[in-house]
Image (cartoon, rainbow, N blue to C red; front, top):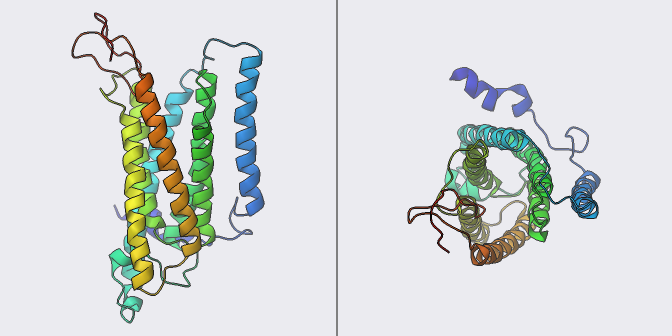
Length: 294
């Protein structure tokens, strides 16, 4: 356990981490916009190319989607554990300096003090979270090869996740510790579920992934209210400008996701077997039997 804690919180790479264009890969605005543009262009190109060659059947991907889901689930668990223990270590090491301002550990999680620099333990894990967002984009490519419709929401959501995680580091934005903990815990479950269904095991009787993502976005927006209260009552939170943009983008994603969710529910009219039949996360029939429309 001590070795695990050492590699999660006390390793020199973690303690001495500093976010800067010269020391961190991908820490420039040019890299951010170039990478997002390449992701969008590649996705659109693949989609149009498959339409052009009239590829009507799904392109076989073998175990790649399952492996990707398993990898993302494991990475999410590691980042969650690293962020959790690093936040505890930061609170332990710096809470003595909060006595004058009367900041509690909970308040620190919501509101970084003014002048906070993007260095140290929690920002190291925030940086790994930022890098993991690029791995997340491979799911869009898999969906295109499976001949599913390429939606604006899919491109927008993945691009915004990269942008927001960049802003967390660039402006030492408040609330990012809680945001990372909530996001990685949710993604560990979601990608674990996707791996579960990808290897042929039965799925849930309701849109499991959608419900998890809506819950995550809702909790994020509720917590943003806490940040606003802290900013007004405690004399200001660090990175509040980036936080405002983050809040607007989160609200936009939630509205789009709710709209997508409602439309998907309206389109799900499939043949279901017996009364105890289930529909998977994408509306696929999971059992066989007599027909019934839901």
